[in-house]
Structures are given as C-alpha cells and as structure tokens.
Image (cartoon, rainbow, N blue to C red; front, side):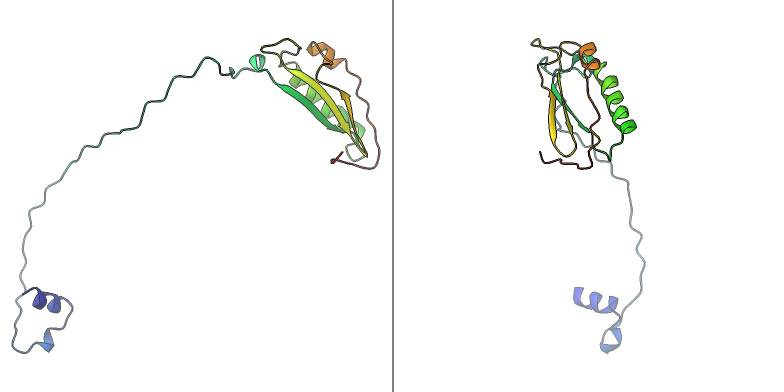
Length: 145
C-alpha cells in the first residue's frame, strides 16, 4: 500500500493500469505544544580582590612613551605628542613605590633611537611634565633601533 501511495504522489498513476486511486482529505487535529527549557550555565563568579580597579588612579604599570622626533613628525606634531603624554600622565599616580604606582620612561627616535629617561627617573606627574624632551628633526626614521 505504501508503494502505491508513493507512486501516486510522484504522478506515476498512469503506469498502473489495474490500480485506482481515490482523492481523500483527512482533517488532522493540531494542538500547540509548549516545552520548557532550563539553562544550565554557571553563574558569573564575583571578581577577586586582587584585580586592578578600572580607574586611572588605581593602575600600576611600567610605561615607556615612544615618540617620533624625526623631520616627518614636524615640531608641532612633536609638541602635540608631548601634550598627549602630559594629559595621560596627570591621570596616573606616578612614582617608584611598590603598589598602585606607574613608572614612566621616554624613548625618542628619528635616524637613531635614544632612551631619554628610564623607568626610575620620575617620582611624580610634575617630574614627568618637567622632563626635557627635544625635537630632533632628522630626516631618517629608524624604528628598528
């Protein structure tokens, strides 16, 4: 019977001379089915106490500012870069003490790279602001030094 039904559905009824098919319609009762799902994901753990707070004043890192002082940077561009450094430094706690302090150093580069100040040079943001960084203005830029 299933074979005859499949053949009829495929439109091959003309090949079956001794078989007749009757079109019938059957109403099927439908009902909505609701299923409940539960999530088995673990809850998010509470943060641990040894994490760094997300405020600028509470970070403790070592930062070298690398500033292009080549001719391509231009003197006004160099001044803009140092102004950015000043604004960033005032948001940090600069110092050498253990804990939530940031140590800062400077490297400038053009044809050669120069470490102008290492990480032990500054004890406050004002010390960093008072640092003497000069625009070199050489034509080369050597970022591999």
